[in-house]
Structures are given as structure tokens and as C-alpha cells.
Image 1 (spheres, protein in one colour):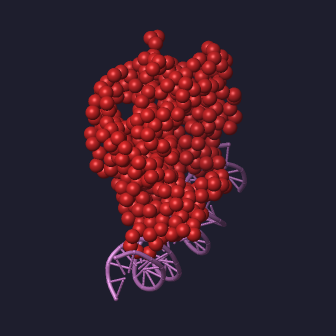
Image 2 (cartoon, helix red, strand yellow):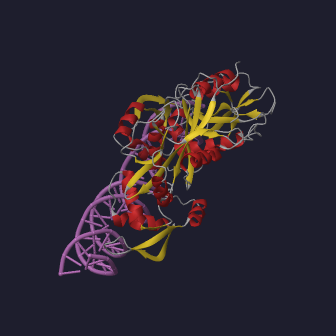
Image 3 (tube, each protein chain N blue to C red):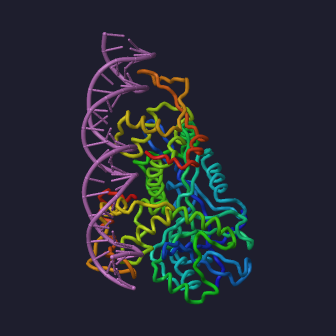
Length: 225
Length: 225
DNA sequence: ACAAAAGTGTTTTCTATACACCCATGG
DNA sequence: CCATGGGTGTATAGAAAACACTTTTGT
């Protein structure tokens, strides 16, 4: 049996949300193959680091971003997915809050950039497939796990949450019913703070209570939209 | 940057179902490390084969079993999960029909054996964790994808399906409501065949219509129990 | 005729959906 | 005072859950 020459990489599809738009963080490759093409950030795993640590390191190196939520997506192992040879990649989905969104859009914009998921450039490797898988995962998962909150500021007005769901699910939602459903899940704390968006009545701020969520989850109560 | 010395393996948690019991296929290891301990079948990925092909090859080599359904589960990459060095393993879940169940229990029983998931031996590596993850996936997935049928004979009496669900979900189900729900999903064909289980009224046989299922799925109709 | 498993409907309860007006603020 | 977005309740329809007796076969 010949020695394995498979190399292992990680890739991270990082989503951000702002102003009713879902974006993905992409980098422009500096080297061959696919030099100057857009790609999902990622790179080779080091011998001693965990896969998650590897993702975080690569994101730090390539984009400087700090992610707020990370989960493994899928492992892509098609033998011909990388022209350099056999590279198997463990893909992750990352979510960041809007403040990160702003920072990263400003710095070093030539090499790191947010792209609206409905307006993507051509992508290197099989990254189009990875990204499509990630979008599907995100869309599915917000309906049965409270990960939408990870894309919003810690304190957010209800309308932000609603807009996030309409955007991701691609359909309009009845405001009253949506609010009733979320409130009945009992995982939001209503704060004594209001925020104004320039015009209109100021909105009450809410905060996701992760502790209470895990408590309820343990008791078998499931989050479902 | 030092050359990567990560090796990549696949592992397969293969489930079978018979007589109200869910079992997992385990092998007794022939070599160190964990010699003579029970483990999930698996092995190193070859340079040119896909991950799925690798799983199928390993299962063939180690157990002779032919699986009926295969899906990727999760990739386990803890740096210390294998005492031989850095081995990252892509785990899969496989399902087999009862006839496979019988065959494999008979042949070479010293090295390959079915274990009831409620009565497992100590396992090598991090295979306990992998198996637990697989069980959770199976339990969750039968409620929103029609994979239960992959564990039954192609033609099956309704009671078999019902018992499978009660076993996997760990709770009793109202026979009438369950039947109504499944029938209303419109993915079963009722055959003009009956089967008797020794005593009692013979049962009509049903068959899962995969083609119709995919058609309905395309139309946006979702399978849900 | 009886034991054992299969098959079948109706009622009640809960959940999801549809729907429109008033409120608080800034300009 | 008007424009803008925030906040709220009720009625209807549909889905889920509870519930028990009859049918068919083997012994």
C-alpha cells in the first residue's frame, strides 16, 4: 500500500447580515491556482491544531475577522476538486455580527470583500458548490435552531429579526404572527431600551437569552419557526 | 511551513433493524492500537478514490456487507483521537435491509458482529462519540426524511414501519394517527400481497415509492412525521 | 371459540393563518 | 400635522391528538 498523499484543508463560508442583505466573505487569491479569482477563505490544516482552530487561524490570517458562531458544514472530497492534487476540505459555516461586517468591508478591500449571496462572482475550486451547500444549511437551520440571533447585534429591534427571516426564507412574514411565535418560544428578553431609526416610532430592543434557550432545550422544548 | 503529515480515514456507522431492535455493525480489531477491541468499520482513504468509494471498499473488505443508503455524518479531527498520530476521520452513516442483517450475523462472527445500540461494548478510538452522533442523526432524520424505509424490506407490513418508529423515537405512537399521517404523505404503494406473522390477521404489504417521493419533494411537499 | 395482530372514523384540542388599526416619534 | 416605522387582538381553518371496536387469520 502506497503512502497517503492526501492533504487536508478547511474552508469557511462566513455569512453576515445588514440592511436586509445576506453577504458572504470572499477573498481574492494571491497565488496559483486560480490566482486573482475569488474564493472562500481557508487553507491547510496544521498537524497539531484542531479543525476549528484551523478555521479560526485561517480567517484571522486572511480576513482579520472574528466569528461569532461556527459549525461544521460538510467535507468535500472529490479527488479532482483541486488541480494541485488530492485535497480534501472540511467546510464550515461561520456567522458574524453587523459590527464585524462594517470593519471587514473597510480594511484591505482589494483582497477581502463582502458579496451579496444573490450577486456572487465566479468562484475558484468547487467553492460554488460549497457556498450553495452553506446557504441551504443556513436557510434550513434558522427554522429549527436559534442561530439567526448570531447575525444580529446583541441588542436588536424586533423588526431586524423579522427582516432577517424574510430575507433568508425569501418570503414575507406576517408581523403579528411572527412576533407571537417568537415571543412564545420564551428565549427573548425585552429590554428597557429603545432605538430610533431616524423616522417612525422607536423600537424596543430585545436580547437573545442563550442560557434560557439551553435550559428549555434540555427540557425538550424545541425552537421552531 | 512543515509538510503536512495528517492522514485521512473514513468510518461507517452501519445500522440495521430487525424485530424491534436497532443494531450497529462493529468489527473486532486485528492489529494495534486497540487490538481485539470493538470498533466501527473504516480505514484510510486511498489517494484516488472518493470518500464514498472508500467507505464502500472498507465495508466490503472488513464486513462483506452491502449498504443500501449512505450519508456523510461528520468529520472528527481532534488531534489526539488516534494514538498513531494525526488521523482525521470522515464518518458516515449507513443503513442496511434486514436480509443483510441476517447474512452478516452468520459469517465470520468472531470479527464482525451486530450490537444492539442499547447494549454496546467498549469502543476503540473516539468511536463511542461517533456512534452517539450517528444515533442522534438517525433519530432526528427519520422525522423529516423518508430514510426509515431503507431499514426495512422493500415490501413491508405497516406494523414494521410503526415498530421501527416507536423503537427509534423511544415512545409509543398511536397506530391510527401514524397510519393516517404516513398514508397522507402519499409515498407508499399498497400492494396486493399479504404476509402472515404466524398468528393474527395477515397484513397488507406496502412499498416505498421513491420516484413519487422525489417528485413531491421537487414540488415542495415535505416529508414530516 | 379464542388468541393475536391488522385495520378503521370521529370528536376534541391546539396551532397556524389571515387580517387592520392605533401609537410614538422626527421633521 | 404628516410621514414613517412600531406595536397589538381576534376569528377562522386546518392539523394533531385522543380514543375503542371490528376483522381476519391460525390453533
